[in-house]
Length: 473
Image 1 (cartoon, rainbow, N blue to C red):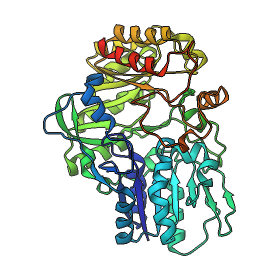
Image 2 (cartoon, one colour; image 1 turned 180 degrees about the horizontal axis):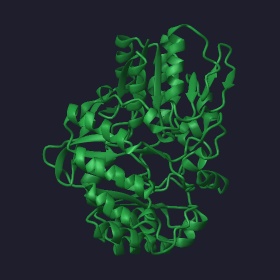
Image 3 (tube, rainbow, N blue to C red; image 1 turned 45 degrees about the vertical axis):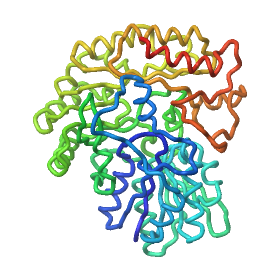
Image 4 (cartoon, rainbow, N blue to C red; image 1 turned 90 degrees about the vertical axis):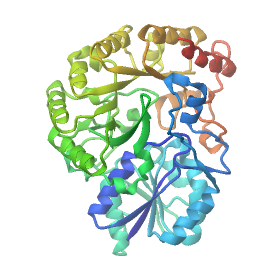
């Protein structure tokens, strides 16, 4: 039994995909052979995107990104469909399985489905797009199976049944097309409740170039981990608001916040450090500091004693205001930088449009607590929201000026399918229902995607100018 995984990455620089590394570990432990087709280091001749987001930032020196001598992130220009065909012909997989966001979904199908249909290989897609808009995903020609929610259990069961030539139409979390084209919709299975039950990730599946990245002027050997999974919040622009509503077979919903025991995650980190020799960690957690104080203290002690490298992670500002001691706990653990989702400096916009009623002053206090503990701050902003006037954007810029983050990112809102803000934008005519089916010539990092009426909204051209204003501060 052979599974060919696909990681389709059009615009980001190297990030080890945690989902595929863990799925690869599940297959490895189940005795199933795997290979990965990774587009990160290719640029498709047929794709309009000429640069990765990192290259754009380095060229603009945006958000503190500077080109580091000795690190040259370049993509090899290829015909992606032909490159994929070569891999399939040589590997001859029994199943092709991909993870995809809505942003990459259609371009994924462009190079995969002509090959899988021709060679009669079943093609399965999981990830955020298939999870939150399953009808759209499964309806696409050439998509045979989709997985909703977490895929570890479902994929292993599917692979085993294909290997034994057994039917697989009843596997929880999978939607499938039978031989007659009828769609079979199974309920979402219960996710992994205890993170310690997850297999150890398979780093050998992933291109080693994902582990070499700049950090604060130095080229580091990265370790990639998740210490926790899920998020308890319901921001309108995030799919977690959708994950919290999915009907499933008992247990918790896929968006439930869970975390490894400190002993288990540190044990895994230690094994990987001994084997790969990393000297920096990036935690893929959406909200690490949401962990209870006692658990975080325990993790910090074990991490400091046994791992002893700096790390980056993300969190909500409120965590460092509700429990300010968490900043010092993470500093003692040698946290170098925390990414904070700031998004907007206007309270009413946060409350009414973002479903994020964070009071004014929370961000400033969180940043002050982190900096007092010696932790740098990366601030993430979004502009171009419905109902956002130029004055509101300027309030975000003023907040940016006050907190003086060490690093920052400004993106234009891309309301993804399956999110409440997407429903609003479609209803108001700011974006067409099937926007992702249109050919895109730039990412949401480069230019706005919404057609917002001006006034009261800034024009697209003015939004681009306002984005540059963040640099001036």
